[in-house]
Image 1 (cartoon, rainbow, N blue to C red):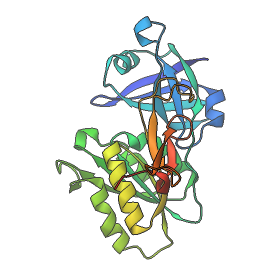
Image 2: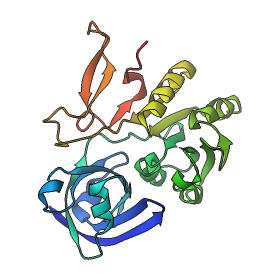
Image 3: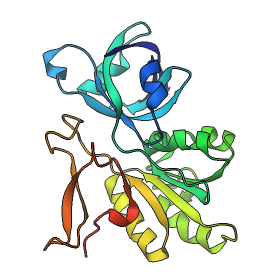
Image 4: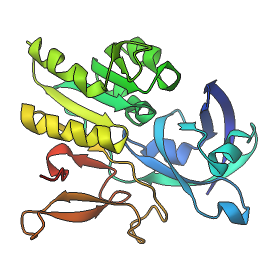
Length: 257
């Protein structure tokens, strides 16, 4: 189904925010859902692109994306009044846990996939990680939503120098309130490290595993990830990120030996 673009604006560097008039999708979208977008009718763009939903309210669907190739470059050139064919909302979303404190841990534009969580929570802690200041997103927006925002960058240009997961031990050492429930999204190496740390620290939570998708509806098995399976000789099975995910319980994620 085609939806009209209301705004397509550059946020910073290669990052853009696009807003669609999409009341059907906005009414159903939950934190962690994604949409599958066909950018235009050209043959070289026949495959749809998956995008995490940043926000969905009042009939408006908001996506945040980075220009990384021909498809997203073409998307960045679309104007108000143009339209895209969009499927969604798709996948398994996050499940907010009201009895816990929210700890949102993200890398890069994983910040967009977790932003909608702020609308269903009174506050919490957000750990934002990026390679440098140029890739750091939504810092002010999370703070304005009432979250304690802590930052790490690989080059030390903002916040602590290092990986975002290095912020966790200090945070846990100072914790004296009700337990955290973790919501995570970001690059796969970060999520594997986070899953291992959560297991060590006995932290409950969910992680969004974004994989390259083709069909987006579970038919092609092109976006599989490994999840724990004690009945398998290898200790894991393949799960479809677009259908069984992209959000998985952290304890289900296979991290190997």
